Image: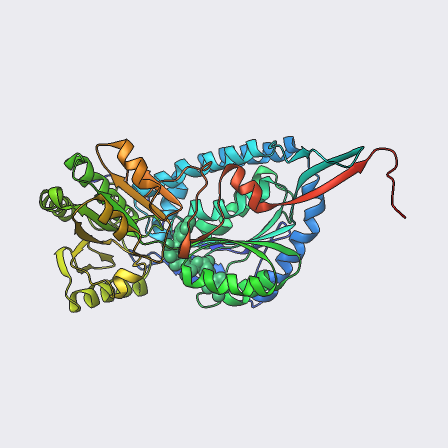
Amino acid sequence: MTQTTETATTLREALNFVGGEWVASSSGTTFDVADPFTGETVVRAAAGTRDDARRAVEAAAEAFPAWAATPPAVRQGIFLRAAEILESRRDEVVNLLARETGSTFGFGMFQMYFTPGLLRQAAGSAYAPLGEVIPSDVPGALAMGLRQPVGVVGAIAPWNAALILSLRSITMPLALGNTVVLKPSEWSPVSGGTLWGEIFAEAGLPAGVLNIVTHAPGEAAGIGDELVEHPAVRRLNFTGSTPTGRRLAEACGRQLKRVVLELGGSNPLIVLGDADLQYAVDAAAFGCFLHQGQICMSARRIIVERSIADAFTEKLVAKTAGLKVGDPKEHDTIVGPLINRQALSTVAARVQDAVDRGAKVLVGGETDGPCYRPTLLMDVPDDSPFAREETFGPVASIEVVDDADQAVERANATGYGLSAGIITGDNQRGFELASRIESGIVHVNDQTVGDEPQMPFGGVKDSGWGRFGGSAAVEEFTELRWVTVQAGTRHFPF
Ligand code: NAD
């Protein structure tokens, strides 16, 4: 029998977390989140409003001075305790990810591996050097570039990889001495939201340092507007789709407010003729279909050199046809449900449209209950929405090219630029090609999906700007100031 994740069927109720208190929404209403596979209600959460967001910002602003002045040892201790608490709740969290977001066991475990590491690295960054002494030509002047926390950070997170992406949106800002208001996705209010309130409160985070406002579908804009327009919010940290990011960037521009944008992708996976065939097939299947292709870094376009194309395609089609589709709580399921029925019909419509325009379905191309079968397309026209926009599901196209130069040209024929992979038996050649690919992330001899907390993660072009991880996050979530101290007195000309 297939091993199955423990399926607690209790309904989880979630309130907003404001100023260290669990509070109902000012609207007095709630909304339900359904298990994407079974359709049963799994979460009932507070339907927060713009007023709730304002209160959360006020609580964060009030908590900021004391948190910014908290010794690094205290901040570090809180993050280390949070990592331990999270690990002690592993089975519950993996189950929650499956029930709230349709995450398979494998992807749930990956999220549970990544997030304690992120917390522990953030703990270390409490001691990151935050300045430099800069030589000055003014006699007696000690000139410094000093970094300080910015104040309140607004964090807006998506539902896919809910645990990782919500934590990524709050961790480094908090560790660097900022306070945060987190707005989770309406599809993951607990696993991408209130769970962190529980864990950080238990870990000893002071009241008001982290605030969380959940909201019903269709109600994101009011809370987003408050985070953009409230003067106490000094940075917006957004992960989500390119259209939403573009809208927020425009609004932040009017406020002259800096925003980090981690957006969508149409990620190319290049397979060169000298690649190990089986390795290339395994890498492509993983890159395309992990978490049913609902990852910003998922491989969407496989670009394969002609000499290996037939053999590669035949093997990849066979492997794809054998991937188990179904209940994400069964541990050997590879492709679980899409997040909701709307996502399912969008993916189905995109594929149908591509087919209507002349694309061929090599495998898949149909729904299976709440799932979409892993799908490979060929001959997708360049002007089709499938080719031009991100299709957030288990569907990739295969394109055959004559040589590596043409592969690079085709890889760059997109508005996006998040991640790319080059599978080759010659790493030196792969490294040379990597420099010509327009994307924030390139993996040589690997596929497109991968993340580690300390890496400068982020995209170029329509995939956004700004970087998470390590020193890059320090630049995003601190203010660099020039401070001088003059020894003695200076001579002024008048
Ligand atoms: P989405 O843009 O629909 O939503 C993302 C977040 O924005 C959610 O919290 C949503 O409630 C909020 N939002 C929506 N409209 C808003 C508004 N007007 N004002 C303020 N907030 C608003 O994206 P999604 O469907 O949740 O996530 C999938 C998308 O995210 C994909 O495009 C994927 O590629 C992208 N993504 C990018 C990264 C990355 O690191 N680059 C990581 C994961 C996902």
